[in-house]
Length: 368
Image (cartoon, rainbow, N blue to C red; front, side):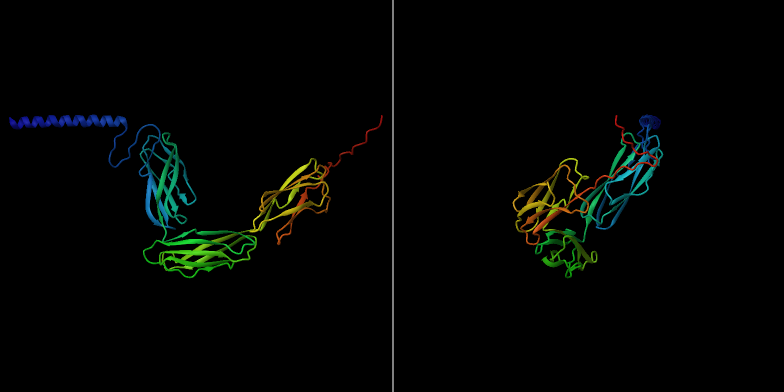
């Protein structure tokens, strides 16, 4: 009797558990939230995009390495998922051929590649995925990590701003060894004689300073070069620092020439010329003149010894004859440029209209 009673109680308990399980199964099925191991969870309605890992941390990589990762997503909706676009945040990141159409319950891939060559320290890149999921039409993925350089060079590109009369100018590039082994550097070599370089040691094997100087005379405009050093590091056997010298003229004139409308001028025309002193000494200007009649001029000193404006007024009817040379001139106190000249140019008279062939010439009107 005891055994039979125990059996009956066990069967009743099993029935209760089975009833609860079936009730739960029915409820979860109706809600569309039932998760079955080994299969995708899908719900009714439109497409739904779900990423397994929307954020990828690649840890620490050496600068110059290419990071590759494939984002995996699942269509957990009830209709075809269409991925129309994958937009990366900059040119260092590219997207490969991604899955453009994914059926319900199926997975798709978005391969991403990141070039770390121009980066140092912590970085983060965003990838925007556009799809037809009405709940989230744009999904933002993230790729992040730390870029490690065996040797830090700051700045990698050295720029020097000088004037044509400057004796010399210099800039400092900091070199920091991030490796455990001590770093040795060779004497710096410059590819352009317009630049000289000197290496100084702040901390042996660890920290250095590279002093780059200009070697005058330098022509106006841009002068480029490269300073190189051999190193003991197998990860970075050579250090190259690009150098640019922006050589400004001692005196700049803007605009370099004055342009006028078609001759003769229909209306009075005003023009302003700015003159800037980039030299070390102060500048004095005087006696502005234009070698043509009727032009009004006013010289104004905007900043003492440094900046000036010349306002000109050309009268209505002003015309530069064919072959005539007209220019603005002003006396300067600078010994290398005693006179500043600005050409004045004018569009020619408009050509007469061309009569079509067969058009009779206009006849004079008969007098009454």
